Length: 232
Image (cartoon, rainbow, N blue to C red):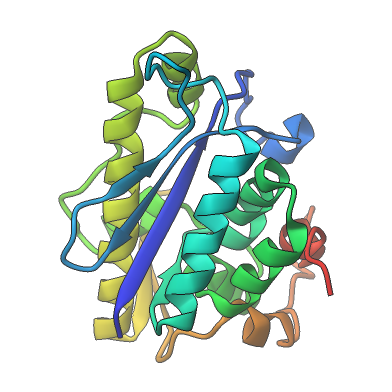
């Protein structure tokens, strides 16, 4: 399976309190995206002004190019993957490109191991928690909330490094999942846990699965939290 991973960073600056739902601050603008095909270096996607300086947010033509690229790579047989790509990355690429229909096609056909995990366990899990669970050396180069501030401050190389690191981490994690048939993660209490994932399944397939028991949760998340933006 030839893997293509992707990830975005947003340009919106806000203070996210512990436990607060990031969607409270939506909609979001895309600052930069990264894609990586197995065995290749990450490719960066952003918009720039006449002097080559990155713009605050990705413009519609560039976001459209990114969507077209992802859909073309799917047609060519690539397994397009993103961590929470359904609930976050593709939703905001769709908005930037003004093309929810194309983004929905890509989303339904892609692999989102985080969403697959959610449909099994009833709660999400973060990329770095899984990297730690798999004992990977890779770590984020900054806190996620720092990236928009750095971008707005003109520290573009820092954000390029950050998004490229995240897309590499995503690809490595997906390879671990495929090889081991499971997701491993570390809980907030520091416990390592695993859940079997013998086969990656597309978002479309996972959408049809029933929700697990969430009766033990005070504020359970619904599938619509991730998928309400999809078109038919």
